[in-house]
Image (cartoon, rainbow, N blue to C red):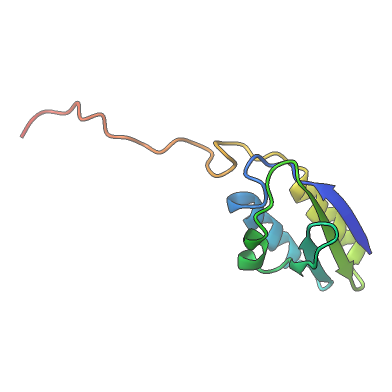
Length: 106
């Protein structure tokens, strides 16, 4: 089975979205690959392989699943790719804390 999906998170398939994608892929027994249509896919359960695709927001990917739970795996992976991620560039829910230097001098 296979499915073609447009990547929605602003960060594309990097950082948090990639981690969520790989976590979801590892929940299933199916053999899963992901890649651009017309190109050879990589293992969907490998963070290095998935981020190495360098897929950006708005690009389309093809997910291929083989095995008993293939349909469920495709549904779960599509859900990850079509869910926007909150925060700056999909990488953080909040801005880092900064020290304004307004304290008492030593």
